[in-house]
Length: 522
Image (cartoon, rainbow, N blue to C red; front, side, top):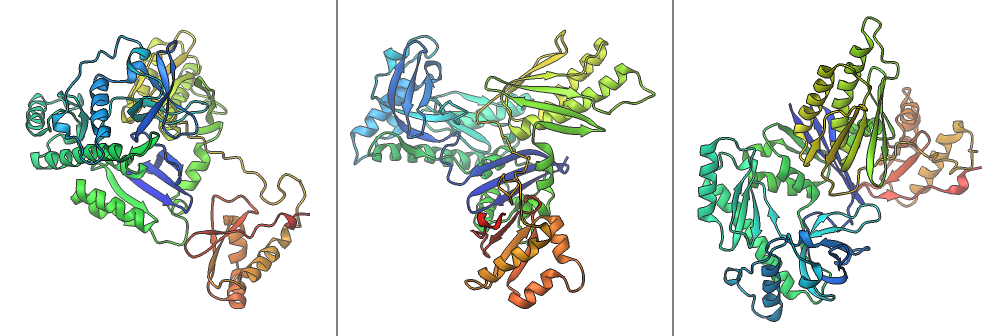
């Protein structure tokens, strides 16, 4: 299996796509101004205690107050609070963490009102991003994740990933990390640390410890609560940190600054893989060039087709996600009903595992497969689903089919489900239902080009691929006539993201030029 990472950076947002053997399996689409991410640390203030929920709401500067449950305070919460008081009491000299004392705390039993008071300052980390009507979910157990190790302040325990099976290697890593870890810190050894030398682990541990010290320095200097004191690395780097391995064949990026960030990180953690990082300079958008736009359009939406006419119907609710499997026109004349049902269900299991990762569906997922009578077929379907989900990084649990033919899956949820609208709104009538004659569309574009040429000589015009084919057809094409009349700085390019009569103008840096006028519509 070969994997590829494609990063599409635009002025207002960044899109990240991961493909495995050419198939899109993960997709992130985020506003570049978004400030909240899992892993960010804040100096917060307790806003309201909720003894009935054994929780509290914390002001960290978000639109909705963040939620912190008593059981999420962590075993080192009192130690962290004592350290925070020592750090905040002296603004000139930072209290050394090595001298911090551990305070015993039983986070499993107790009440929130005995530990926290309204208005109290606390140091917290985002565990889940805002979802629907809920604000961010917080934890009091601070951690710093690296590629090989996870550093946990106020914990002396060294744990090794259960995915490292060899006992000798587990013992080696545990002994090695125990000998180099800082005082008052615990460490989790991640799977990719298997076989790594002491110098590599010691270097990363030093980086993570400096992040912790920098966070304390930021907390010391913070003028008021609701202040960001540590920002997690960008989503692109976070994905590379968690997933980069020998199966990655290439990493493409269309933005030079982001490209350099990726190169710096890959050069630090995997110098031998530096050659796979490539800067894309093509005229087409990077997602169109690598065929990702079409996969996004076909993979999202309420109905997803997957094999010979069979399809899934996916519905999202506040409490859970519901998936219905339908055979459609998928019927083999020479096969029995049971054989047809098994084949459709196995294909659905393959597509569903991809959809869970692609949409980042979390919480409870209920799947209504086509009924099967034979126990061995039901077990084969369950085994297939478990096998497909092995590549999923999110924690999950799968139950066998119930007597009603339903499969229940729980999957870790840390951010809202990815929902990409694939139904296109008419860009030319804005819902009015009438437009100018489509044969005059190119004349309308030419008038806008003429207008734009008065202020700039170089720009790009993006149109639907069908419209582009019409503009580009023939030896003396419309495109060639435009260049002859208005200059060679005009570039006309296809864009699969646009609907049929939609268009957009951009400058040479990719910034959109507003040339759309609603009064063009009759």
